[in-house]
Length: 294
Image 1 (cartoon, helix red, strand yellow):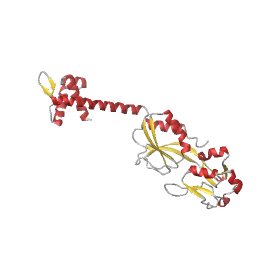
Image 2 (cartoon, rainbow, N blue to C red):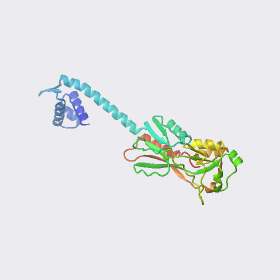
Image 3 (cartoon, helix red, strand yellow):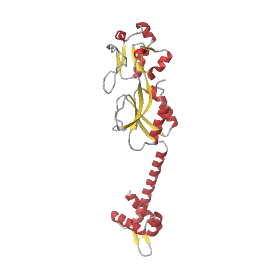
Image 4 (cartoon, rainbow, N blue to C red):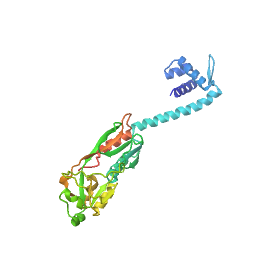
């Protein structure tokens, strides 16, 4: 910035032809202008002006340097203008990590893109717990408890879980009335990609039972598909089975034994200034809360 200031002084002196006139424009004394030019000449190891008691004219080197200096200052002013616009209007790229529930997120994000066409989205779908800061994400959307003190958080919505199966499966294998009947059924499970552990079903057991691992996958949409195809009973978030339940492709069972409520959250690095594009994304998602529990 000191170098840019020196260039500004040099250009002003060259255009006004006087230390006094340049000082008047820049609001400093002629002595300060002279010292700035002397420091610049010393740094460049070249004389920029011919000085006399009556005139101040550019040397050949000064004329060459003036052309370059004007271009540099013009580029800097253009960069300042672009950054000013970027801080006033939501534009630019947002890199976001989301869980593997595309059917839930995509409609809302599509609407966001339509409302903010100057914002470019880079979406990374994974159930792995990414490091927001180290991996360079602007924000992540996750469920469950968050303990990273480096992150800010806003809740997007709550959701519950249901134990479901298709009408055909229940007609063929019977509808379980108690938890003790589950070991006699095909059970479809979810495995966490990061830890490799199987997600437990949030059931209120008096006497815990071992559930058969008839099918295990790391994708909610696959669980929904196999359940609707009559391959077994599974436990899924309400938002992923809402359509199947409404259309009659799935039935809820054992509701009196299910005890679960969790939240969707958006998280972003704390500290520093939030960009307009990130601010409008957070506000938009909070206003369009995915309808996760209705």
